[in-house]
Length: 142
Image (tube, rainbow, N blue to C red; front, side):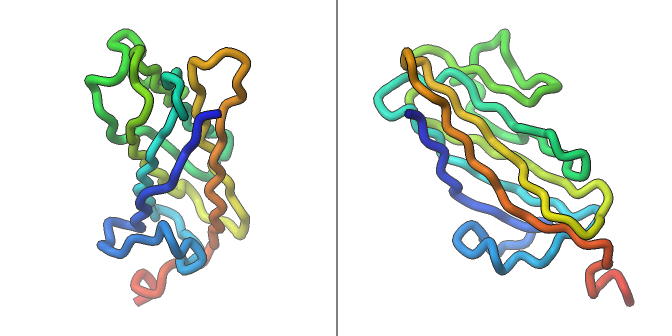
């Protein structure tokens, strides 16, 4: 079974890495963005695809960076935010940018999916549990 590991998580371009302390992230306001890095592992199988689940209408998620030489040239990121990997890629990384469109008092849960080329193998899913608020950040109130 493939595996997705959270490597780094930065809020609004800050230097502080929240990947080990997700609870320290304040509720997100409209316009806030998060840069997330993942390590992807096929666990002894070639990777097939990485997909950003963009089901939440309040969060815009897009793949922002990846090793281009590892991706099949005819399957670059699409509107579905999918990467398909060349044969022989068993581990890699990807960065995703999430931006809050409009803030409301709610919990949001963007999902990330990883599939390998191993036969009869389930894919991996990683959920990022976040909250949003309608209140502006303290620095925006002034």
